[in-house]
Structures are given as C-alpha cells and as structure tokens.
Length: 628
Ligand code: AMP
Image 1: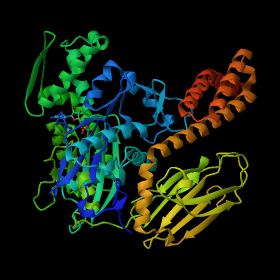
Image 2 (image 1 turned 90 degrees about the horizontal axis):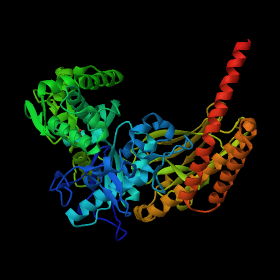
Image 3 (image 1 turned 180 degrees about the vertical axis):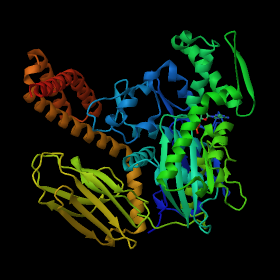
Image 4 (image 1 turned 90 degrees about the vertical axis):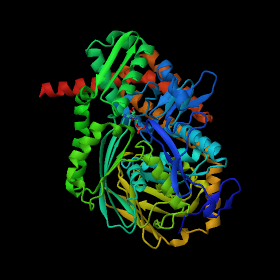
C-alpha cells in the first residue's frame, strides 16, 4: 500500500515529483499555510497584507459576505454575534462537552440535545464547526493558489495530540469541504519536532518535550522519536491559558494602579479595545526591552519587564506544573528529556523561556548541543512541520521513512445510512482501534455490522467489504448495551472486525482478507469523487443528522408528556403539541435550517417544564428521605 497522488482537476494519477502538497496549521487563534520550496519549508504570506498568520476568525457581514482573518477580527467587539472565533474549540464536540465555557463565545451556540454535535447560529442559518473551519481552510487555500499561481488540492493538516477520533475526523471533513484532499492529519508536536530534524530515522530514539503556549491555549507533549516513528507518550495542557491571559494581567495592573479607568473600560467598547491593544503591544515589546510606556487618551501607561514578569508568574507556574504532570504520566524525569521544542507566539516571552529551561535544566544530554529548540518563529513552527510532512508524502524527501498506511478510510454504517469512519485513510498499520456503540430500540437483541471502505459520507457511495450480525444481545432499554466494534489490521493488511457486547460478553468476528486493497487508479477515482461531492455529501449528512435529532426529540417529548402531564398547563400542552407538529412537518421536508430552527423553538418552549419536572423529582426524593 502507498499514498496515491491524484490530480483533482484532471482526475489523473500524478507524478509525485511534480506535486505541491501544502501543510496547514489550523489553529485556535491563528492559522497558517506553508509548503516546501527548494527543499526548505516556507510560510505562504497573505496576498495584500503580507502577514503569515491568518486569525482564525470569520465575520458574517450584513450584505451576505463572509470575511476571514484580519478583516473579520475587527468585528469581534463591534458585532460579536456575527463574528466567529475559536471554532477549533468546538470541533467534534457536543453541547454537553462545552456547556461550562458557553459564555466564552460571543456568538450563539445551539443548546438543544446535549448529546449531539454543536451547531452555531448566525442570523437564520445553522453552521457546524466543520463548515466554519472549512471556510478558514478555503481562505488559506486561496492565498496559496494566488501566491503559487497553481491549484492547491492536497494538504496535511495538524491537530493537537490530544484530539480524539471525532475531532480528527471533523478536521478531515473540514479539509474536504474546502476542496482539499487531506493526505494526513498530523499531531502538532510531531510537526514541530520535524522542523528541528528530530525525526532523523538514523538517529537513536530520544525523548522530546514540546511546550506550546499560544494566544489562548497551552499544551505540553512528551514524545519519543526514533526510527522515523513519533510516539506521543503523554500530553497535558490547559485549554484556557495563553498570551491573552498575559494581556489581561497587564490590563488589570493598569486598572488597579488607576492608569486606566476600570468602569470606562467595561462600558466603552472602543476604549476597551484600545487598552487591550496597548497591553498586547506592551507585552510584545517587553520581550525585547526592559520597559514600555505610551499615552492613551491623555493618560500615561507604563510597565517594566520586572513588573510584567511578577504579574504572569502564577500563569507560567501553572504551565510548569502541567509539564511535571506530563512527565509523570510518561514515567520520566526532567533529565530524561533530550530536547525541548518551543512552539507558539507566547514562548517569545523571556520569562517563559527561562522557566522552561530551568525546569528541564538537566535536559542537555545531547553531546553539548543546545537542547532548547526555539530559533524559528515559534508561531510558524507547526505549519512548517506540516509542510515538511507534506513534502515527505509527495515523495520528495527520500530520506524520510514512510510507513505502510491504509489508502482509504474504513468504517461501519450507522443510523440513516451514514458512514462512521473507524480507521481514517492514511492510518499507519498494523493498528487496533475500537469504538463503542449502543442500540436505538428498547429490547433490541441483534445488531447488523456492515463494513465499508471509502471517503463518502453515505455508505451507499462507498464500497461494501462485508457484513455480519451480532445476535444474542440480552434485551435491555435502548442506549444501555455497550457494543464495542474493533478494527484490527495486521501488518499484511488483513482486516478483522469484531463486535462485542461488553455487559454480556457475547462477540462475533469477521475476517476480511486483503481483498479490500484496490488498484491505485480505483483508489484515485474514489478520492476524486469524494472531493467533488464533498459539498452535497456534507449537506445530506447535515440533513440526516438534523432529522435523526428531531425524531429523537419528538420521541422524548412524547415520553415526557406521558410522564409529567400534571405539571403542564393545558395551553402549554397545546403549544408543545403545535411546535412538535411543526417540527414533524419540517422533518418531512429537506430544509435542515428549518428543522434546526423548529427543533430549537420546541426545546426553548419545553425547557422550563423539564426543569419543573426535575425539581418535582428532587422534591419527591427528599420527601421520601424525610419520611424514613
Ligand atoms: P499563536 O497562537 O502561536 O499565534 O500565539 C499568539 C500569541 O503570541 C498572542 O497572545 C500574541 O500576543 C503572542 N505573541 C506574539 N508575539 C509576541 C512577542 N514578541 N512577545 C510576547 N508574546 C507574543
């Protein structure tokens, strides 16, 4: 098995030598796109502005235009409802996952069924994080096409090492929706290590710490790199800790010392924004100088590096504590680490660098070489690494080791005929992965497992490899059985699929011989189709998901009414029935925004009664307790 390069425009299999595959760092705060030019990775600058970093921000303008990057960022304060930022935090997440951070986002995140994936409402349209990320990727793709003056259709995209299957799959989908064939999803710390040549297949295995402090997030990863293999031993981090907190510490300091007017700050958006900008400028300047001063609206603002360092000490301390936890998880000591890679704009702060070096002070075992890797723009490192990985995949870097991989995704059919990918394409083999499923009907004793190969969202468009039935599941209410579907691919490419109900232990296995290997031309054809149909596939998927969710909510509403009829006044019941029928009508049609809007209307109206019912249950439980 090998990577099959294809030309998306012509549909032909390409000569790998002539290909450009870009590397993309799709970040929480900023995104970048890079490629390898004459053997060297280089970030592609935004045409017009010349900036390397593209803020991961989208603005939905009143005239229907969608702005991306610096242009969109201007509207964060002015029109927060229509300005989307930090969408990476929502990738592959359900509302339940992000409920506690809901207020962090200035835009509307839909709170309906807490189990389903989040949606974002902008005006009367509903977007998934995948669609929003695709808009950012599309902008980056366009920049690259303008600068390189040729179509760009293939990419490697990076994700944090801790991203789970859902989040990785969401990132792949976003790439596809943007018209990109995503050759591989690479861990950000792995990409960063590649930049420093730490992946030399001939070098002995070594342990590396990648310390990544960006604008809003902190990640520490401990890797073992050897023989061309990057293994993530452990990761830790804080998804709400970064350079933005440094800015806020400065603002707080100015407010406390009376240099800025605290009430004015909260009430006047323009003033607030000006102070925020001054704080960030101060912070950046203090990376090179000992003090900073400026005037804002006639008032003197100043801060010294010592003062700044004292302010951020607790924040830096927290990152170091997390480094300690990551080492502990990897069962290592600081002296076991041979190199430290610094990533993210905030590692430019000298106090941060100092603290990291001190913590890993015994790290320098590598024959007198400097162990701290920080000589490249730290905010470009991940994108440059992605470009290097892309170049390896394009076959240009003959020294790099390419491991055997699965040429197409493998997965099973789930509700509504959707393909649920279990092994994404380009996954290294041998591999063993599993995912848990459950039943959708009360008392269900059988489950059909149909295995497919391909990149399309609906199984009917993919290639069926086989199916079997797991029978003998003890009858239980829907959602209670825990059925693990495991995909095991051995080094010869033979796929074994196993289904196992964990509570009862019953299991069934099917062996699919290497017949799932396809000739390269057919793989190329399947990949081409998947990119060509990405938009309509994604639309059908969104519609099916909205319908599934609506049906589920309709069922729960009926159940709820039957159980709690006593707490619902007659007029409210009539209104719930009316909203439910409206939703049923919408489900029969194929407008996903209408289904979502009516779903939300029903949920909004019914929510207070659900709370009442909950109070009642709690009260009765308390009564029961007292009576005893
Ligand atoms: P990133 O998410 O990696 O793009 O990092 C962005 C963060 O790095 C923001 O909080 C920036 O304010 C911060 N940053 C960029 N340049 C500097 C600098 N010279 N000194 C300190 N922080 C910086």
